[in-house]
Every structure is written in structure tokens, then in C-alpha cells.
Image 1 (cartoon, rainbow, N blue to C red):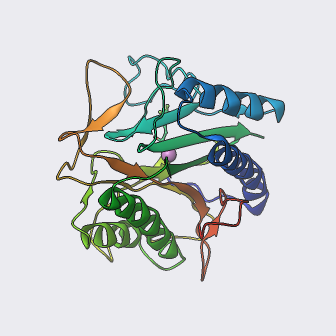
Image 2: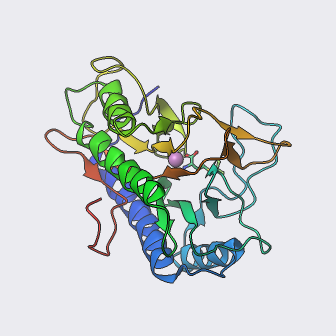
Length: 265
Ligand code: MF3
Ligand code: CO
């Protein structure tokens, strides 16, 4: 069931969303080659708790897979061929030339916010830079479709068409989602699909839109040995951007937008 949020609920989601944005802004300013992914995670957790809030991902168990080990961290930090759900570790160092996707969720006042950005460390391959830029722009194009009167897959097809226009591949087995008092609510928001299909978008629907786009041919992110991290099948890099948004008429409202003023989303 897709829930429509009241303006009072959206006010609360604006606060969780702002905290997510602040965490990602802080990490964007702090991340340096040589840091461990655990250091990034500790900074994020401390910031969230200092603001009387709770990391959404910590101890998360998917409803669809109740047997899985609860997610053990505040952030997902996924490097290069890791698409999503990289578990922070004191043994994992981020290096010059890496692309590092950081995903963060905050629970505050009964509501979640969820967002991700891919950071580039130092000088990287031109093709990989193009992948990161195109993934970010695909999110912007998806968000532009999240308006009253459109259908759900108008978001999906805008993302897919843009990513494929560069020959990049869309990860199909991981999707965006509704969000609110639960981290994952209906509907699933795929990053591929046919225009003019799917449910009609209504004012007050809150969605986490999150394209995961890969450089190679992989259309799936796969986990190995029962671990959380999901990687591309061919080992090629993938990028990931995510925002929590509210469907509005005319223009979607982004709840997890940066405060740095140096990015358009
Ligand atoms: N943004 C991701 C998602 O919505 C992060 C989830 S991490 C998890 O699936 F630990 F909560 F699964
Ligand atoms: Co999400």
C-alpha cells in the first residue's frame, strides 16, 4: 500500500532528510585517501546520535529475508565494483583513484530519510568520471519526472534512457522505494521501465529514488558468500546516487539536498 503523507509528516521527514544531507556533506568534506571506511562510519554515527537521532540501517533486517544477519553499520560504503551495501571495516582503506558510494539513512521523529552520493578520490579514469556524472544526472532526470499526473515508470524510464544513452548498464535487481515511517515502503521504484506505465503519482507520495549504474554489461549486483556487499558481475565499477523526495505538482521537493551549494542536486 502506498501511503500519502500529510504536510505535518513531510515536515518531520524534512528534518530526517536534512540530517542525512548534513552527514553526506560532512563526509564529502572529510573523505581523504588513506581513511578507513570504519572511520567514515564512526563520524556519521556520532553526528547522527549527537542530533538525537538513530541510524536507519544499523541492525536493519529486510522483511523479505528475515534470516539475514542484521546490517551492522550506520553507512553503506561501496567502493568501485561494489554497487551497494558495502559494510564499513577498520581494514578497508579508501585510495586515490577510487570511486566511493556512501549511502546513509537517518530515523528521527518517527520518519526516515535516505540518500547516497558517489565521491571521486583524486584523479580517475575519464570513463569512470563520466559514469559518476551520468548517474548523478540520471537521478536528476528521474526526480524531474516525480510530479503529480505522471506515472511511476516515467521516473524509471527517464533514468534508464539517460544511462543507456552512454552505453552504461542499469542494475536491475536493486531498486528505489517508498519511504516514511518505514525505511522501505511501497512502491518499488525500478531504474528501468516503460514510460506511461505504473501507478499514477500523487501529491504527498514520498520516494527514495536511487539509480545504480555500471560501466560494464552487468545488469545485476550479486552478493558472495552470504555477505551484504553486492558487486557487479564483471567487476566493472558502478555508481549510486539517491535522494528522498516528495511528489508535488509541477516540481518534486527534494528532502535530502546538499547544503554545500556546489551541486545541482
Ligand atoms: N539505500 C539503501 C536501500 O534503500 C540502503 C539500505 S542499507 C540496509 O536499500 F542496511 F538498510 F539494508
Ligand atoms: Co534507499
